[in-house]
Length: 108
Image 1 (cartoon, rainbow, N blue to C red):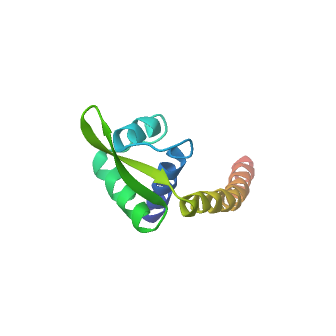
Image 2 (image 1 turned 90 degrees about the vertical axis):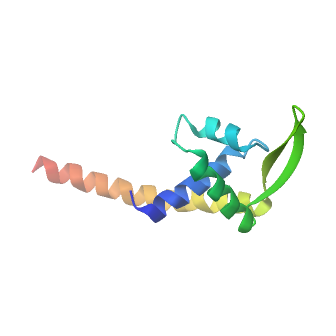
């Protein structure tokens, strides 16, 4: 898969994992694991990039006697997710066309 496309999809996957509420790194990885394989070394740069873009905010809270970083989606993150959903409709339309043409061409 194209690196830039994959990078964009992973960003949106992380945002989608935060739709229901704030979370922390390990939990985000667990939430995504049925759909996407992601390591900590992949996740944390994404989180930093999304924070720098204004899509996330980060705060610390105590859990079990230790500080844990939590990530919260901002209105800008929600907007980015909504934009992706609209763009994906266009991508699926293109995919449907390609799939139709390939399957029609295979019958000849």
